[in-house]
Length: 198
Image (tube, rainbow, N blue to C red; front, side, top):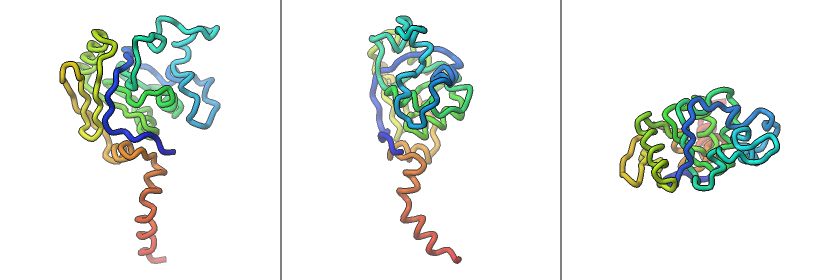
């Protein structure tokens, strides 16, 4: 399933300065019944966002109208726990296109890359600068430049580079998942197959 191409994202950010956020907190297990990628955003951080009577918890960050944007800034070790793809689906379906943290669980990172969410790992010091900028100004803007592999705090001009697998980077910039990538090179695959002896 193709998704939006990712090149340069300029956006405000939603801060979630909590360490060790696991996938069961991102999307509780009771919401994993669907097999399509739609509708999971409604239950992103469900137990943190809502009371048992389904009323919003006023003190949770996603319920605070002063924070918005396509970037979620999380604490260290974001996405730990089970390997459920639904956690990445929920992040994407809610509207986030990038998650910034100082460390990601590997499976969650790969699940994000497979569905169009860019996980940007920065140093602990730079992460604190990002949190500090949002605290000063909830509308602070950040630029995430995938071609240059750099994230910038626009108010100060401070930036830091981040790593990404070359194959995944190509897929993100083209809006491809793994199947889209294979379909895109179908002609090359067929040509190669024709040259192989039976």
